[in-house]
Length: 635
Image (cartoon, one colour):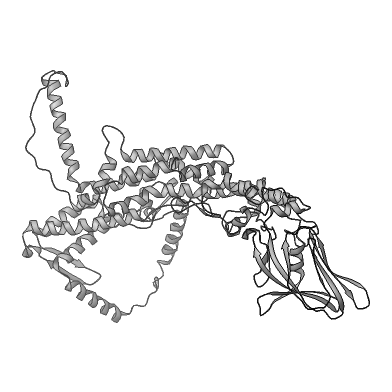
């Protein structure tokens, strides 16, 4: 019986098998006189007994009697555990971390403890302790009247009774569902009003604590009096109850019995378990709310893919209009309203944990659904049109046009539309930063790569909304924000002159006194950068040549760079034994920070229009993989 009550989640077959092995081993060894083999330290044993005797002797007589009665009750009544209360199918769903001694049960109070206190208050209590080898007798009648002694012992018992049941209820947990399939199975049990383990545990708490609530007896007496009046009218006077008002006063003067410590602590539970105005109890209403969640989960299961339905349920819960939100409102606004803080701390975890586990299990399908939508609407178009082009692929010779970039990035691109249509209801957006909306401290888990890069991906692009083209003519340049910078040529031994052409703007240096030359980007001419020089023998050398609107970015990226004492940057492009050198300083950068993509090691930047590469996934934990979001994969 003890093994059965304390086996927890161990299967019963395994329990029986293990018990049989232990018994077989013990019986096989009983014939061996050396079994069990144990060397006793008699000196240590005697000293320990003596120390314990001093402790027991120093206790007040009332505490010794109380401890003795508790110990006797503990051996007569089985401990109260969650595993003992619930059935086998419910053990994977609900678990408990605290076991109450059999002393603190209604059965122990009715069958032993109450009479033991009365006997101790009127007679001398004698006890023999075979562990300590002592015999004691305590006479509490010398400390006061029997009524006072019995009342004091009862008060000690009831206060400890409350603490034990508080620990028991707070230690009850609803196991993590783990997967959506398991969640459906578990909610079918939790949401069954007739067999829900939560309802069973609440009923047990009510049964084990209601005996100290005399108001229940007063209500039953009043109900009995009303019943007698109705019976007298119908059976003796032969009248219908509503036809003639007959005042038959059979009530005796009574005085209500005050609440005890147990009844006072759990008085709110009485309100949960008693019918309201002839209707259902609050506990039944709560179980009906769990039943609605069960129905919702079964509907989601029948749809096949729980992803879209999970996202919808999460959005409705965050907005306070789902079955989960309604159940939480019932708990906080009706069931726990008016209870003491200690009573709330005892009951609320048990009532809320099924809701939390139900919400937790829809987080992962919601994340998978977001990843699939991201993959289909944003990442796959990005992979097909932009990822293999410069500036997203640094080694590519093909540049992405402004039109292609604007389809994915910017305030009107695919990323911005995804955030607005699919993500907005699940996050709190402050400017261009987003953080998950939470319910019970849970929400979608955005990956750092996504949340950190979103501001750059949705920021307006240079010239967005104007007439821009891949060729980048003067009209397009005027519509775009421009970066103003200056170049200072450096003398190059071995060259008579060299020329720098940036978007049609030329710097021609012939080893004379150097001055800063003014440039803008994008420039008014044909996009592209070319650096060439003439040697002493008349040969023309090309140090750099890159056409297109990203020519300036490539020019800076391919240069050997270092920061000078004046704060400018020295750029050098070698070609054999010769190298062209320039100093660069930025005067103003009117482009949005999000589009400034070319950054020197020292931190200088010129607008490049490269928002950055996109991740394949945007949400999920460390276990998320690309395979889990492909259209063929199941969540």
